[in-house]
Length: 328
Image: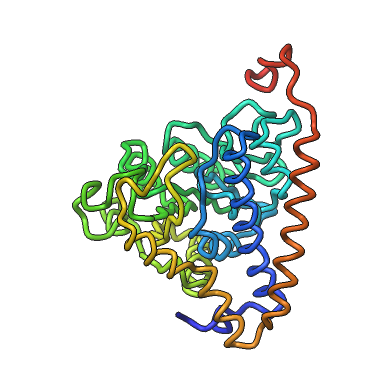
């Protein structure tokens, strides 16, 4: 693990990063709980990827850069500007949901206010869209950078290859991310692709690909900081493979104990990146245990309040079904 101080971030920024990691974890746990008690219909968890997502998102300028996420990127969306309540409004399917006014499934994040572009349930269709957004920035002469993400299973879709090929040809300011958690639902990586590293695919499209340890906050942050700078300097796209864990089943409709052994699941939970980050914060003197406990208490209270507020909001009116769907 690289020391947190090597990130170049201030103590305030590092503590805020930790707060975002905890917020992502506690909110994810609440979303999971809501499905189990029948108050919401579905959830896809990002537990195990929060540290990587916070470090990734912090490297961008959220005032002008664009983010085209995939369904596990809730924590990154929080860092980009969405609120805890925004996420819950989407899960409850409320009319005030900024992602789709309650018209899409949960976990389809989007916010026009924060340059977060929502996506389709068909996996990886966000990739060619991201290439288009980056191409627009290039044509306009701006230095905006586009970030888009997907899982290692979804990365095998044809549109991903088309997006990367076009981005490589045009040297577009786009960063492609594959969050590799080793399972495409129940399919392990040795049955998904033959190449050793997903990041190696970038070379076939004429740009750099790197693999980073998603449990290491500093390594991830520095990798994305450089990638963003290179994109702004018109050096073209990058592919970053984030090696992360999937601590839960694929979704609320899945049971990973059917295809993963008890030993594998236990070992994975023992390597929870949240625990690693907390140990670093203690060892390097950024926070005390009492201070971390206080942050956790504050986040839990925030999630509780946001849950109550979101649940009380009105549902979409049936007669508004086709509004906000087709352009006028």
